[in-house]
Image (cartoon, rainbow over all chains, first blue to last red; front, side):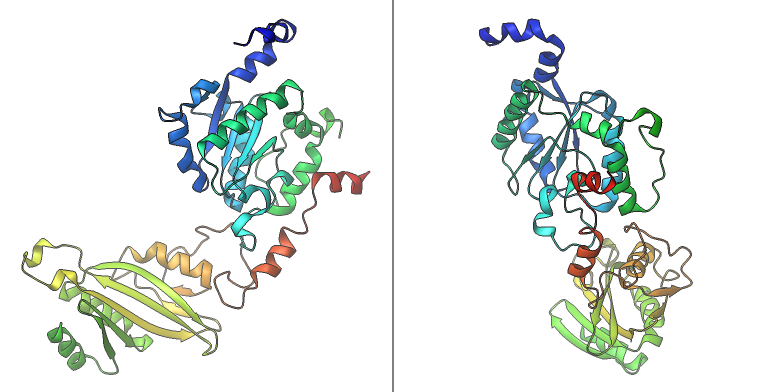
Length: 186
Length: 174
């Protein structure tokens, strides 16, 4: 641990603890999941950065969306995201969640993921190498330090708008709203 | 292989048989005789339906169904037998408008998911299929998405382009 960070630890210990122990859930949607096994195991060893993969969304606070998102998996992504405890951070891999990538004219692939759930950071590339993943994670640390990784707060505040977008795509959703209307400011 | 071709030509009429490679033949046939032909081949030992696929010939206004049949059990024919290396490709054409065809579930049980897929992607209705529900897609499309006249770019612009970003939606509401 860096000595000049001791002040930060005393000031806001829970934030620092969150920052250095990210429990990641990987959503194996697209081709990006191929990069995950080498990055979490011995070759690149994500545990140096405090990232450890967990089994269920209820134990996780880092959500990695690896690769393209089809309409059917978006449903599962929204449900997974809503199950995660706060604070939670989302990182999207590759060019497909940004603007569709090579699936820009596919009838069944989501073009902009951040219309449906908030995304804190993107790692560009097709596909990004594990080094790029770690650069993305260290960048996420900086964002957490500056309180800019506030996607979950945004989701809470703007939940009616996110829900409206989701309903516009799917028609009727078969689960109740995460934040019922009385409790939100939006 | 020559024996098989001779047998087929004596037992069926109206078959166009061409040899693609040493171990691969193509049979083009009328749509009425497809069930007979498949059950005939199954009795001959071609008991593995590898795939059912479909081509859209939009200029001819026809859909072409392709059945690929091969051997599943090698040991029945012995190690010296060449018979287990053969693939037989059976093609038939059906009209494009209100496409209907008969299911081959009675002959090959594993045809069920293939036919469901063709139903949702090409809009072919298979008579006698027990459940033609959606398999992979989320919604019913006016034009099935794998047909040639489905304009993907326009569809994408209509569906995904019309969804506003969160900021736009916020401004619109307030």
